[in-house]
Length: 115
Image (tube, rainbow, N blue to C red; front, top):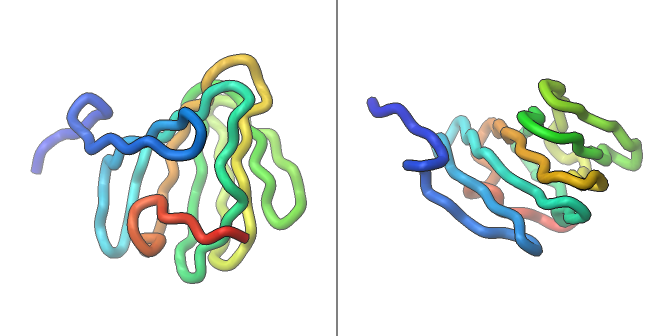
């Protein structure tokens, strides 16, 4: 076992200027850190079998879950059950950094199914 950080993790770019780092990629559990710049968002999506937990490390994110808006500040999180449409947005002025914990793996790290 080795320790991991964003300096050693596999990096991927997604969306319009967003970044992600794969911290753990298992069949039963996935953990990624992502960064969404100010004014950007992920595509609205849903996962057939995976549940996800979003946890904000820095900044403020708006997480739309099944049509309801939730503002998550630093050190706040929210669970998204399988099959529920959701979208994370950064409507603030600074980057939002957050963890996404998925179980089981959501059909490959951060593969998205449009909602």
